[in-house]
Image (cartoon, rainbow, N blue to C red; front, side):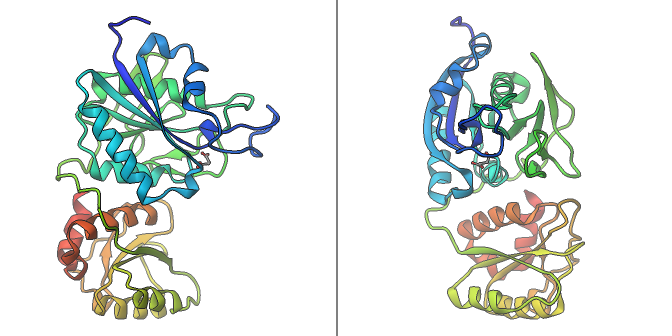
Length: 333
Ligand code: SIN
């Protein structure tokens, strides 16, 4: 290790990358979020050739249990470390299950002057062919690379670099579980070579504040013969927003669309995303939610659209009843 290497901070939150199993042959039966970040770093001696690593255990959770509170804590640690004079980049280790939501949250809220790179693993650290060590090394390589500056929050897994707004988990168990549907990866890593092949979108508008109070925003799905009970209950419970995991190009069953139009009439912001996993939901010429013409989430999947709706409504609650402005927000990020 030499003093001339960049200082990179690793913020650990848990996940399978910090998971352990009784048997090295097991890649599906294990406990996530058990191995401390100091051990994860120690297990990759090659890190010492790439950067001076400082590790901080921000949390130790299975990411299925991600919370707004932890998002806020993580944002505060990113802000803290990115303001430190000699920190060249930040790596966040995370579970894969909700990584795309945390990545979207950080994409929307962080304007860090240094690269912020999320990474994870599909196999626990004790597994044969664990993927965590290489993913961690690659994430540090990207965070330490000057070409990663100004590209927003990034996601690195399986030798690919993704934009945080685009990255999604697309497979339950494969090592190449992550992709960027439609957009494709931003770049790739091969040993010391870090190469960007396109520039990310959604970085021009000002970042949104981390909410002090989070509005209730939930997701409902459209499918054959849906009931209206969930939409009606959410409206009565005071929900400020509903994202619809709609079929196809944002189509919504007429029964559900009627209930959503009523919800919109009662002041609930309604956004259409697609449950297909890829493609854009057509943007209406003019959204008129009370008439069933709802705001489009564009290419954001339902969970990512929910993160944007949460932050947009927290920052500016009036957007909940101004669908034209809300559509502009969805088109900007
Ligand atoms: C988790 O999301 O924390 C568990 C699953 C994983 O990391 O792959």
